[in-house]
Image 1: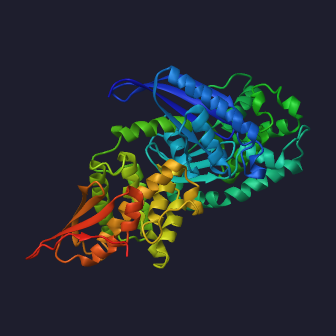
Image 2 (image 1 turned 180 degrees about the vertical axis):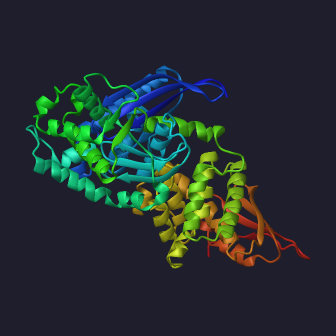
Image 3 (image 1 turned 90 degrees about the vertical axis):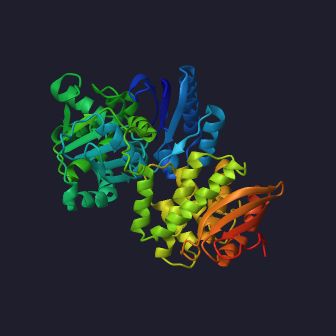
Amino acid sequence: MTERILAAIDIGTNSVRLQLVRIQPNGSYTIITKRKEAVRLGEGEFRTHRIQPEPMQRAVLVCKKFADMARGYGAHEILAFATAATREAENKREFLRKLKEEAGLHVRVISGKEEARLIHLGVSSNFNLDGEKGLFIDIGGGSTELIVGDQQKAYFLDSLRVGAIQMSSLFLAHETDPISTERYQLCTSYVRDISVRAIQNIQSNQKLSFKYSIGSSGTIENLCDIAIRMFHNRRREPEDVLTFSELRKVVRHLRSLSLEERRQVDGINPHRADIILGGAAIIETLMESLNIKELHISDRGLWDGMLIDYLEREGTTIHEDESSFRASSVLRLGRAMGFNEEHARNVAELALALYDSAGDIDLHPYGEIERELLEYACLLHDIGVSLSYNNHQTHSYYFIRNADLLGFDQREIDIIALTALYHRKKYPKKKHREFNALDEEAQEIVRTLCVFLSIAESLDRSHMRLVRQARFAPKSDRAVLLQLDCEGECMLEIWGVEYHEKAFRRTFKKKLVVEPIAHAEAEPAPVEASSS
């Protein structure tokens, strides 16, 4: 690996952040520059469930500026992540399309739990927990992430659908006068209702007891800045903490001021003056509910976790006897649903052999990323059986789509879920709402992967591993051979493949001819699949 430049862009509800780093051949890195622009992407969204035109255009312009800057530095790759405002918006496809067309960015929309995982990676990398567990709290504009973990591992991940901009939009919008006690209590009551389940989970599980509490994000940093100026008359130092008693005094003081007066408070970021109390209601409620006396402050967060995750995926921290983080997340879901692991792994093995051999004869243009998604779809394609065998592909889709698989962005989860959905009966069509919600490139990936999964599933329909190997080979310009290494008679498997011949022809524009090679006294002749 040679030295290269990597850019990470975090598209948040309040701000867009850029971090440029130089990665050395040994995996170490140095920060070249950091940039941050407040765009208020979530402004007006939480009442309409849509990103508004002006915030959308502001975000696109800033992202274009950051992407151009990254390319000017010679960035080898630009990682772009979007969080709460984007994932909750009904018009997120429009926003993502603009980012691609105008800024040249392919943006990954991540789930709340994936955001929490990345925040833990980023913050824990720069805070010495001394072998203990810590509670990590990150307050964004549209969500708040709660994590309990030690230096290496997160044991609890949750994302609360409440953030500083959302709170201000719902309860403090257009408030320019001092905020009354009653109005502020509406905020804290709302936070208490939203967070009650997560708090109960943490408090009721002895394994989640923690020694340290660490807060990250601009809201928490700014509240600590104000407290240090107010009570210690100096700038904040890295070792400073925000105590609960000082936080309550800061909140009372800020509530007593008009919006214009809040902008003049020593230590405040004037651009946060209108949302600081919405964020304060969140952290005050959480500290009170979890009996937190003091909060350590970290200036690290999601974008640092993005970088660490990127380096880990390159193999710097994966042990030889461990599967990848993504694979572990998939297997946890499958086992939690009681899936038939032997069958799932056999289907995956067959499907990957089909994928590889199809690539060798130029049936598809895809690579390792799509291959990985196919494998995970194969492993999870039958998990819906735990609910009901009838229509189980639909149940599998629902479980995959809503399980918050860690290590994946939302587009990848959608591809896995839809590939599993189409493994039996239906062929993907644009009239299907879930399929039509994907971008065209992702739709084509699903069309391709679901054919491999469908055929592989048919080749193990008896769950007896009668088909030991399967591969595609060229036959003519208009036809492809499916060569099967069978253990004895496998006509049921061949009949199953015939059912998917029409889908194969629609996807690859070629006829499918099945060639079984049985280990018996006589080898049967090739069978041309029909769409009957």
